[in-house]
Image 1 (cartoon, rainbow, N blue to C red):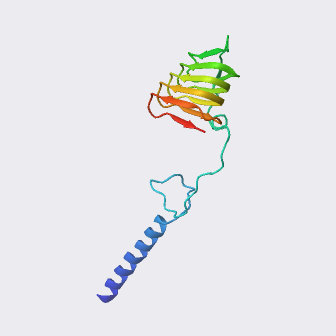
Image 2 (cartoon, rainbow, N blue to C red):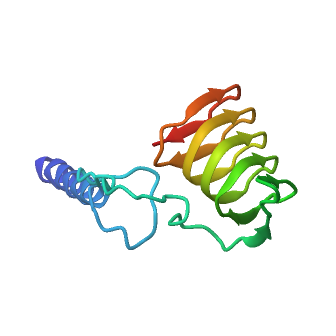
Image 3 (tube, rainbow, N blue to C red):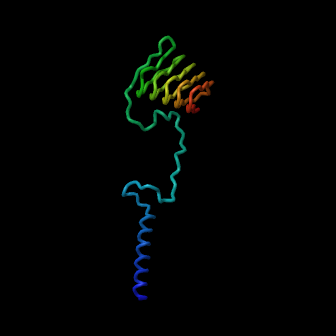
Length: 153
């Protein structure tokens, strides 16, 4: 009876050891798992980018056109498009879900939502929409009436 008890204990011990070894493997070749088992953490990149929207990984968007006429450009009906406007005194963004590149602007008004806007420089920024991200090298006067907008300088 001691031999059977010892054999059973040995089988349970070996089975437990094999199962635990499988749980602690860091080999990810089988695909993603429900929870990471590796204790190594990956640090986020700390390199700064002068123009993060233009370097973002995304599917190619249809190019939209907006003209600066008499010092004003209105970007409307450009949803899910990429739009570029050079230097312009006043720019009004009414589109949503757009990627917008602007030159030097005196006044920028954002009425749309969830836009990524890169502006070379802007003096006055008014945001009425929600979820917009505006990136500029300048330090504009900001009037944010929306929600969850970010201005990165």
